[in-house]
Amino acid sequence: MEKFMLLFRGGVNHAHNAKDSQAAIDNMQAWRTWMESMAQKGILVGAEPLKPLGKQVTGKSKKVTDGPFIEAKEMVGGYVTVSAKDINEAVEISKGCPIFDEDGKVEVRPIQSMEM
Amino acid sequence: MVSVLTKIFGIGNLETAEDVVQQAFIDAIRVWRLKGIPNNPSAWLFSVAKNKAIDIIRKNKFSVQYDFSEDSRILLTSEYTLATTMENLWKEELMKDDLLRMMFACCHPEISEENQITLILKTLCGFSTSEIAKSFLTSEETISKRLLRTKDFFRNKKIKLEIPSVEELKSRTHAVLGAIYLLFNEGYNSSQAEHLIRRDLIEEAKLLCKLLTENQYTQLPEVYALMALMCFHTARSDSRLTTDGEIILLPKQDRSKWNKQLIVEGNDYLNKASFGRAVTAYHVEAAIAFEHCKANTFEDTNWELILDYYQWVCVFYPSPITELNKIVAVMQVHGAEAALEEIAKITNKKKLESYYLYFSILGEIHLRINRKPEAKQYFLKALDLTQSKAERKMLMDTILMI
Amino acid sequence: MKEYLFLFRGGEAMDKERSPEKWQANMQKWMQWMGGLQQKGQLVSAQPLSQEGKQVKGIKKTVTDGPFMEGKEMVGGYLMCKAENYATAVELAKGCPILDDDSGVVEVREIQEIIM
Image 1 (cartoon, rainbow over the protein chains, first blue to last red):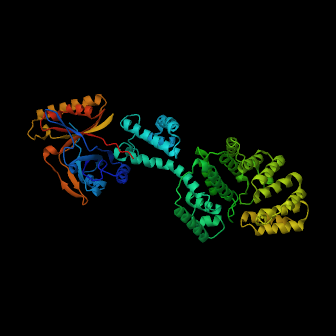
Image 2: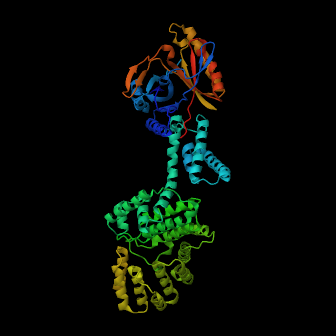
Image 3: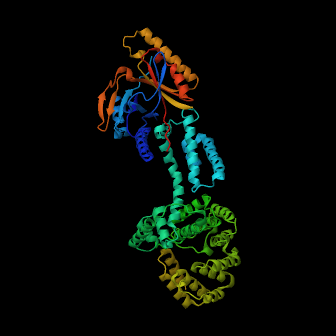
């Protein structure tokens, strides 16, 4: 089993974007259901939503700028780490993600093992 | 509350769970002193405890003290799922509270007693319509209609599921107790043909009453008294029937089969029932049941005291059943003739005449004064009034012995 | 203490021509930096992400192969740490070796706490 990081971008109702609280709660329930199904299969490693704003430190001068840094729909809104056989399986797993109901996208990235 | 918290932190962290509860109570006292007691104190406490638990998880997600790696607990470590998982874990606990709310709603003063019980059986005890119909010796259709009417009543009057205000609570708790009492009696002495004792109903009644003892606003003396009463009665239920389901009357019951644990428990509840000035019918009935439990043999029973108790109940909380029980006590203390005189004093016998017990007592009295033909007639009348197989068998045996 | 996710972008690793010596030296700097965070009890987890990946997008769940954006915009790895606030988190980020190359960027993002 390899580990994959699923980066969530966009999504109109994502944790930080939701305007009305009932929509946010419904949305969280959908996320929970998805994650619970992964936890039951034992493939969920970790997951966190991220606050919409942030800071960026750039280059040798270590210049600090306040976010947002890119368009909202490109911004990473959160991540999930899962175990999967290969990237295709990880892609299949990602298809269960509620972010697609909010027109968001998931970037599926293999975590590089640190063998030296 | 602690049980939910140990589910969250793991059995190994019982102390954390207890700390959270304690902290929640300290917060409650502080805030309530300033702002008064909230409408729903238990929900208030739950939400404080829940938030404290969330804080601890956030701070200690990666600490070695807590093991969140287990599949079900991993959801607590992610912000995506922490709040919703918590919510679901507490729902169960709040359910108990909801049960209480439902119970109060079911016992709305404008709903008839019959409908109250029907609704309780349906919504709280999960009985099917046919099971309820059986309990009430009526058709499923009648029950469906009753339920429909009650539900319409709720809808039309826009009744909310809530524990009533403190002022209203006392009278409402009475209705709830009444419903529990009826539920228990139906379980203890079922009108159903097949089974005389319905343990399911008994357990439901005890569970509902126990909930009332756990809520600070409903733990009234009479609630404890009813709890005591039910304990004393259930302590004796094993000795009431033979293995074949035949009735064993009190004088012949094997008292060694009585459940000592339940008697002790009942005693505890009775002690708790003794605060305040309230002496309700439940208090006295519990005291009577305790007298029976206390006696080592039937002959040791303090019938004088029991008679005093029944006389008191008959004055303050008259009902056909207590009236009949009093007559039994009179018979034990003063003999069959006195009992017959007592019956003669009753002016309106109409209600009594619908009880099989009334005629079976009359039969017993006449048997004792050696007026066998009349006794036989009375037992035959009693036979017509009960559907219960066990009771019919007992009456039949008695008639054959005459 | 709050949790922060550092997302790494760009940096020397993107330079395909780099020598094994440079690679090794760079690796050592990363290990030192992370080791320091670990000793202070601030490191939660960290992984590099491999450059390939797939993207699943929108309601149709269209799968596309990476790269999805310009190399230097791509998330190359992440690190999760604990810090008092954004300011201290940014200070920690400033120690990141990715900034030794002018194309390197550390995006500092606080974990969103969800309240119901």
